[in-house]
Length: 216
Image 1 (cartoon, rainbow, N blue to C red):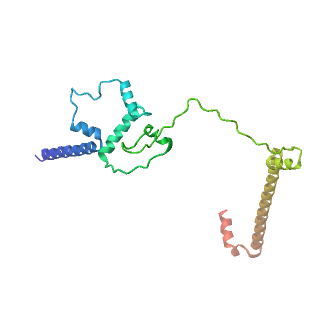
Image 2: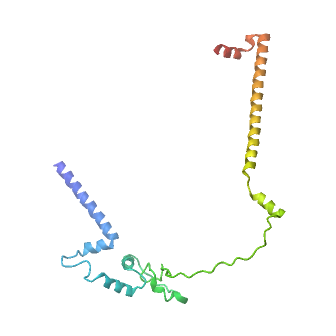
Image 3: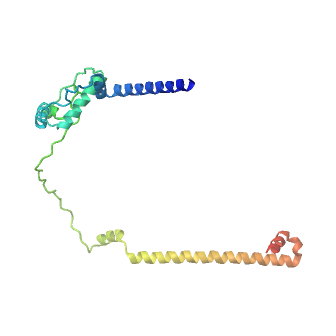
């Protein structure tokens, strides 16, 4: 009996959980909410019986400059926002110039909002632009000292770079040899000093060196 009750309780909990999820989904999706409230009958049809050209003509007559899918998306957005938002009227300042004529050619976020996104018209025949006017400058004398000095300041010679690199390499090599010779000389002097101490004082005066000699 206890097992059957626990299984029935789990089924009831799953059913309540599913019902809650479906209610939340229907609350955020206006299309599914409309279909759940008023399910379509078998005799009803989702789309009216007329051709795509007629629908294009009707939509383009209402909002020029927009395509069919843009009009459908805009209408769906307007319906969703009108159902879920509260509109507050705010006086819109009048526009000047050509913006008034092209006010209906854009996409509106809200049905009662001013024109937002506008589509720029691209000319099929672009206008040829004039050639830029280049002003004359002073003549350049290639044999003058000024020109040669400027040229040498920006020109790089490969042979000069190789020669400078060889000189720098030789200098670094000489310094390395000098450091190695100084290290060897210092080591030799230390060995001579230790040998002199050994001969004078014996191994007892150098216990650390005696241990190292025994290990070696």
